[in-house]
Length: 254
Image (cartoon, rainbow, N blue to C red; front, side):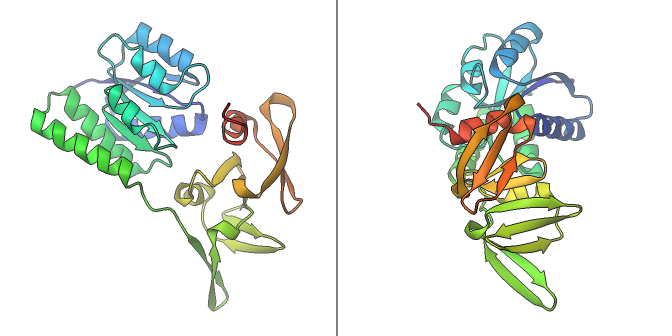
């Protein structure tokens, strides 16, 4: 079975990651377009009629929900989002599945398997079971990390996650900054990001993750970048591709 899919997410690295996972799960799959916002996604779906659309919910222009509600053809939707507040609306939009960020390979593979099954005409009782499983996944998201276990010589020091001000990539390590103290861990930045609560920690640069509760103020500079000042007085500059994410997370919702 040849499938055609579209990916829409305003985070280019995540869109690329999803594309790579899809190609690994189904080598014959054709990614017809990768979109950076809802308006692009709506236009591409209308023009290309992909079988599947993997949509972020919070995107510039149109939200993923608005894109899904405007689909008139046979394209089926899987939502990929950092927020679990949209579950009921996702069902109203007849989504095939609803995957929470940070996206694990196992959860995404399960979502893709369900989507393919629905497209191939899985019996209604199996559809019902899948919907119940989806509800359970939304109601019981993966547990987030509560503390870091840091090796220091022969000792292991436990650092509560909420005490970390910011995290810095350092070669093949990360540095945990907690006040005036720094802890070094041998773990990739992407691995750290995947186990942190996205409501409390935000990637603002390929080398920086900040505890949003430690942000005191920020300044907008050129090209969608920001200077972020923490309560410790330390200042960080965000990367260009993280501007929309920072603006959504740190500005008033009205």
